[in-house]
Image (cartoon, rainbow, N blue to C red; front, side, top):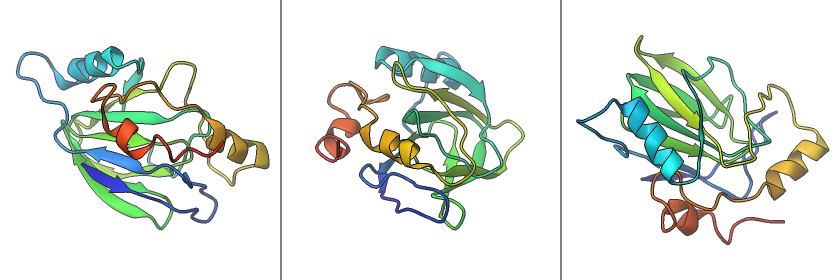
Length: 168
């Protein structure tokens, strides 16, 4: 696991209290495809899967949901923290947990790059591509924690790295 704390970066707020969690080789299955395995894992841990697709090739962030990205196939170079952030390389079986406000962008990916995206119940993907408003910043800071880690359940990394860091 990699932990990445990001600061405000230009027009991207990132999350001032919660780190990005990068789970390497978190999802593996020889029985079913990784997209279905990711969806099953996320669902079992209270994160309903919302979509299967790639990651946008432009810098953006979300203010209305914490987001988990399960890499179901292929590989990509992604930038986190935008626009002068950190480049991470992800491949099938990896997952990224992005707290609300975290900038992200697909810099380059293989033709078979496929991601499963999920959010905690009641949270959603809003696509933000410009500086945050004051109400959006407040929302990022008070957005509720998920009940469980999307990959590791009740005793997972969310409990270790997020609980106790949230400012309300």
